[in-house]
Structure formats: C-alpha cells, structure tokens
Amino acid sequence: MRSASVTVKNPTGLHARPGNDFVSFVKTLKCSVEIENEEGKRVKATSLLKVLSLGVKLDSVITIYCDGEGEDIALEDVVNFIDNLKE
Image 1 (spheres, rainbow, N blue to C red):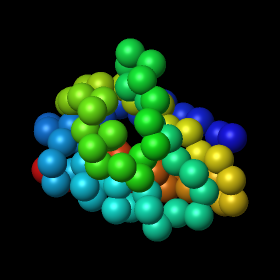
Image 2: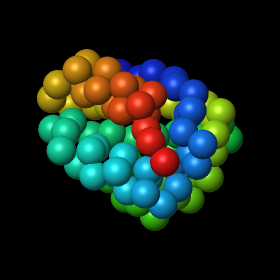
Image 3: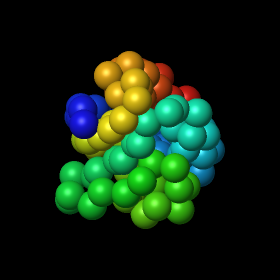
Image 4: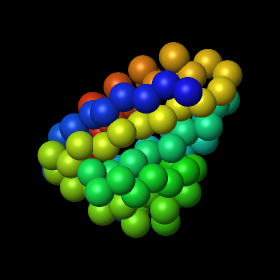
C-alpha cells in the first residue's frame, strides 16, 4: 500500500462535477483507491456519495491510499489528477 497527501486547489473542492470526474478517473485504475479527509474519515474513492461525504473543500489536505496492481503509478496519477482538477 502506498499513500500521499495532497492539498486540493480546485475552488469547489471535490463537490459535484469535480467529484464525479475524480470518481470516474479512479474507476479506470486497476488498484484499490481510498481517500481520507483531515478529520481521519476514510472512504473508497469509487463512490461519489462517499467522496462527497468527506466535505473536501478548497485547501483541504487529503490523503490518497492506493493498494494493489500498479499502486505506485496509480498514486502518482491520482495526485496529479487532484492537482489539475477544474471546476
């Protein structure tokens, strides 16, 4: 299992469209991906409702966990995706 923390720079955080884009991207990966908010709540990143329940906003620091096939590359790809999220 690999993990990394990233600060969300998207003005709307992981709500609505950016959250859906994130979940859709994660579903293309072969490994398991989980996301954790600053309060320590951790959910599977393949569920939009669970991701939305984290309340990720602008400047939130989240931790991404990848486990399984290709986890190193997947973690890098997920961090890059978060860094480049658009509204």
